[in-house]
Image 1: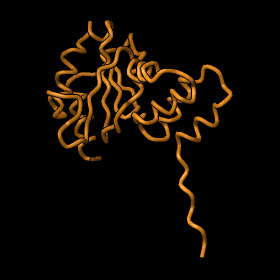
Image 2 (image 1 turned 30 degrees about the vertical axis):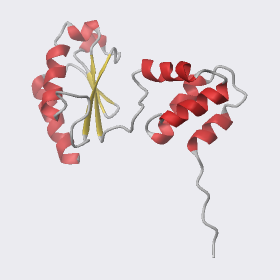
Image 3 (image 1 turned 90 degrees about the vertical axis):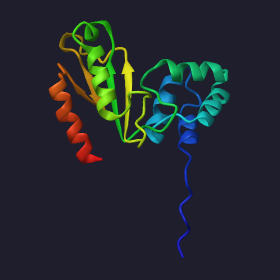
Image 4 (image 1 turned 45 degrees about the vertical axis):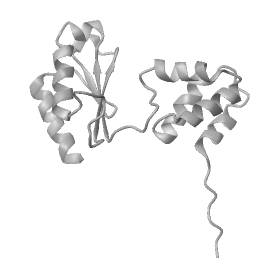
Length: 158
């Protein structure tokens, strides 16, 4: 009978791989999120201990950058750019439509957990806004009609 595989803790693996790397907080957090899909509260504590930082310092970095999540992501994550360039071409109306269409009008996540809507403050498409990102895929010059098509595709995938 073959021995059962030992489950490897991704946080331990990441921390070990950066044990002697000064200033590795961001790479560590990115690798943990890549492995788990988010950065759990207990990982914040472990990272702080391993890097000789306070929990508040690590938590502050996690909550400052919009790329990091403290909870598991929804099946579909929609990030809408709210930077000035996108605001000037209709981002506020777009985020309202996105929230309403996906059932996230009162909170960031839909009641069924399929969608989350996250305002972000630059997706790097300043010359072609308003822009949004759905599941890591950028979409520029977004209109209400284009978003309706994207939302219908997401519904079919869910």
